[in-house]
Amino acid sequence: MTDVHSKATRSYNMAMIKSKNTKPELIVRKYLFSKGFRYRLNVKDLAGKPDIVLPKYRTVIFVHGCFWHGHEECKIAHIPQTRTDYWKNKIQKNITRDLANHQKLKKAGWNIMTIWECQLKPQVRQQTLEGIELLLQKTYLGLYKTYYIPATPHLDQVAEPHDSYDSQP
Ligand SMILES: [Zn+2]
Image 1 (cartoon, rainbow, N blue to C red):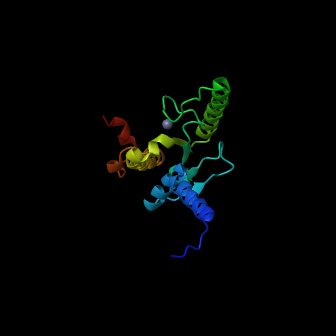
Image 2 (image 1 turned 90 degrees about the vertical axis):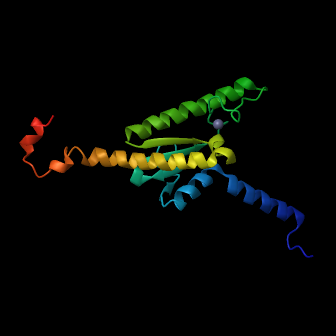
């Protein structure tokens, strides 16, 4: 049996394949793409450079590593027992920065979704992905309402004179 790859190359390739397939934001992206969602990636002029941007849904998605972004009460986000203050400080800074970015985005009219790495573990992945999809659909319907309902308060009565709206119960 011949093997074209040296052992080193092969294990490098395996590591690459593994990291690519398990990269949390890639899991989310692949799922959304397969469901027909179209998005932009790492848009630089948006605060915090969100991982996934869905302009049609006016939504940005951050896929966060639990440790670095300080996921509360999460096992993966466990602070090391050595240099505890150093880590706490560092992660607190990340949390503060994330919050500031969220506020900027909200002000600019974006909906924000944060997906945590632990929510993409195999046991819970499907549930999480379906949850994102559902939330996007709801968001879309919400936007639809905001833009169109006020213009026609009673959709089944649009043919009536405008004044009659006031007398509706
Ligand atoms: Zn977590």
